[in-house]
Image (cartoon, rainbow, N blue to C red; front, top):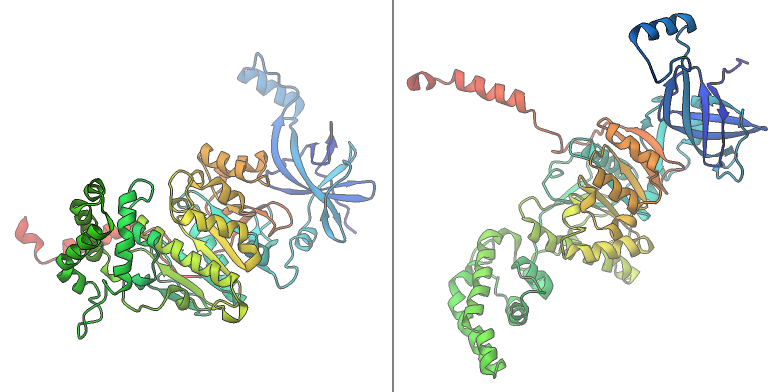
Length: 514
């Protein structure tokens, strides 16, 4: 048996959570160590380290003095490191300490076999997402079931590897024959390709008669709080929508659902005015809800019909019915602005949650589903009132009981609603530089320690802190490279410039303009 050499020995005060050790070898931040004491083994993670030469004082240092001291002492460097004690290693894995290891206990570099045993695949719930940052020979697995039921947030600055991380997770869901719905804000996943081929692209086409008043108001850009009279008018408008305002005349092309409305807007205006005359008897009320208000409302409808006519289709298949189980479903919202996307997101999320909460015999979604929301800070917003925020909060609080998971993806964590973020019991945090982002995430998650926060600015693309119910202990991970094909990667700017420049030079028309 090969005798192991200790990296160092524990010194000073030791708690069940932290210890310091001194070493003549340079420890590495993020390195796993094993502390042995009284026949027990404890797993720890180095959170910080520093070096010093005890023969070099802080005062009166000159290059000549340093050179002389190094020559006499042989550059005697001593290293000190702080270790977060993660728990005792036993037959049941890692368990919380009740008492601290003793001072003088030897500290060893954790061997690969021990780490593979601790971070192994476990059972069928576990899927691989990467390797340990400190030991690339050790694969890292997460409990996918816990990632779905206890929710997950993927957070990072732009370019740190969010899309690749989501791609890896989608591959693992597909491998497990799972069901996912991606709310794709920028069309990054519209070209998604997985090895199994189970990808279903959904266009956001809805039957306007299925919209409730609040959703219709959102599409019209009407704020319920600041436009009470508009909300009242929508009571009349909604009746007309249900009667087929947006339907094409018989014999017309089915794609022109708005054409009949466009031709008949004058008739609708007169009908609205007539209805209001019957409803509003008071002269002052007629002034408030008068012709100008009706005209503005109809102008909004007119604008909606011109800009988003492709969004509506009479008798369109409900979005919920378009979700295919055991596939990765992508709802492509890239053609809509934030307000319109907000309405569609709240609409589909409400339908999904209601379906999963309903009668089992009538459910359209018979298996659990995970919702993946890109640009989550726009809709689960901290400072902006959105229609999606309410239903997102409900799913974050109640979804686990009904098999509806929620994954938030954002490059602006400080913009996320803290109540919703606090319900994300799992976090994959790649590089975060801005202190406000770091503080907001740490405040919302008691699992993210100050020591872990200090890692965030130094992470390279693809490196992440992984914490939560889905992993046994906090981990520093290099995320695997996703094989999924999508549009999330940065475009090759320089090569594109050079290519286009070369094409211009080769053009036969260039000389005529010189």
